Length: 210
Image (cartoon, rainbow, N blue to C red; front, side):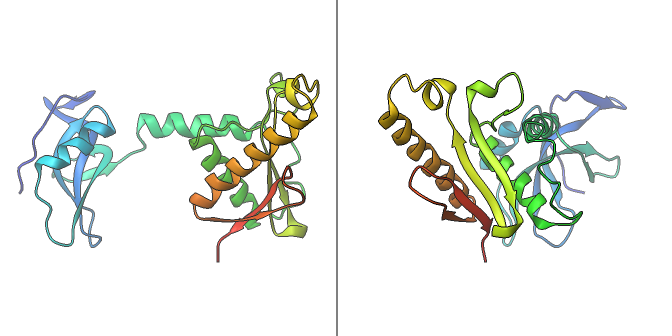
């Protein structure tokens, strides 16, 4: 069995560190081979890859999990992944209660809404909490539209810009156009098909790319 360098971890079984981030060699044909670890975070495992040779046809990647007594790895969601899923859930809770009322149980538009929300949230762009306490703050608006076979995405500015227009109508329209383009660029870079909807300050229809 290959030797694995053991480091400090949050869980030790039989005196041996086993739970954490591991550097795993994968060739796509099996479960992967532990190379180094565990590390307290993903970046530590990623940096460790520089000190290891890569077998032909294989790649090294950080994986979170529990090292089994036989040397294999039982993969688990990392604390960071669980925190991310909780944050994404909070963002999705900002959607209107009936956002999926017109969708079937297995309608791909429901999945697309979640993927769009995840892509924008990962970019640091919050969803608009239209009916919540933060409704005046603005954010990204998502609406599943079966008639368009896509998700309409647009930006809602802070009330100071969109309602009070403290900087004037021209600034409101100009900033709106910039933010809508920013949303479109993020989603296009994430591999989705993005089509303008209406004027420049309007939103976009997002669909899965062919």
